[in-house]
Amino acid sequence: MNIYIHTFGCKLNKYESEKISYELTNLGLNITDIKNADAVAINTCTVTKDSDKKLILFLNSIADINSKTIFLIGCYVSKEDAKSNAEIQKENIILINNDEKENATNIIYNKLIKSHDSNLAKTTALFFPQEQSRAFLKIQDGCSVFCSYCIVSRVRGKNKNVPPNEIYQAVQKAKENDYKEIVFTGLNLGSYNYENTNFSYLVESVMELCAKLGVRLRLSSIEPIYFDKHLISLFDEKNKKVLAPHAHIPLQSGSDKILKLMNRRYDRKHFKNIIEELYKQNEYLSITTDVMVGFPDEDENDFNDSYTLCEFSKMLKMHIFRYSKREGTPAFNMENQVAIRQKTKRADILNKLNNRLSEEKYKSFLGRKLDVVIEKELDNSMYEGTAGEYLKVEFQNSVKLHKKMLVSVKIDEYKNKILTGSVI
Image (cartoon, rainbow, N blue to C red):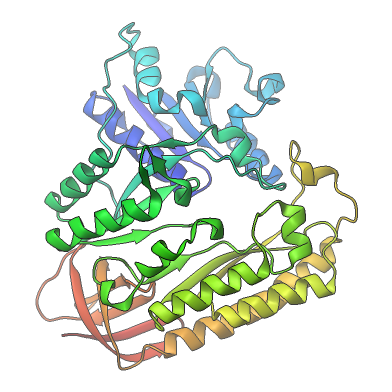
């Protein structure tokens, strides 16, 4: 039985699709291209209206769609209005919402093989071999913050946290499979809390394990409200070999007025204080962020607050989004919607700032040593990888190297958001 798996949306979706693919392969199914597939599984996204449109366009593009079994998984089918969409109400389309996603492999297998055994595919342990050079571990899911513009928290469900002992086992397993960097990921990662272990204490305990194993831990996106003093202290420069010196902290807006309308639960002063304290721990720390422009009622002063706070924060990279109305969210019905032309103008201004700050950050590492995880081999014995500081690095080495290795590189040159150097 051949099945094609397609993924829309975030890195979390990609991780989940890869896990489903791994489990189905272990059950004997063949992961193939769409042309040769008997079935198609689509991990969906509904973060914007465009995400929904892309899904429907993709469905309509599938040749002989009526002869294939189609599985729609995740966020799109978890919306309240999904079941009323006639385009996905067909006998050959099976809907698997987020509450059922952990059992998606069983549902797919049982439907295709006509089995009634609900326990055929035992849930794979947290770690499984992955295509990329870093091992991603999803330790948390769900969100109860409910930002006024976000539909995802409304379709992903309640907070779910993996027990610490399973996380420790997964880190150990990743090491045994030659991974040198482990990435913690989740929908709202910083909210992790399992019994008496909150996020910062989990990170500290995993760092101790990483130090023993000789691997590096990286944290994906963490909301500002979870940066307590304990978590900030872990980014001390002396820990950079076990905790990647990089923090992704979504700002969204630097205006107190807009943050309140967004229901973001922190203010400009709080965010600024986090940045200051992190740089005290390590002046070479890299900080990345998400910024939204054109949220309802955002005026020039509000936008300027975002601009100046990003500039103050010396961001390595900003993911810049134009606000898009989303049905089912409080922001959808807010007054004083910002014109598309104004949103585009503000995004362009932030993009120019982004390019300047990124270049300044990259150049600050000239002459320094960076620890780099190799991601791919280029031509002429050249390699490319990512440093702990989330910087792209290229280097040449006469001795054959391979993906996943962690090497120290002395940086000699910078060009077009790439640092180059030589292995020490």
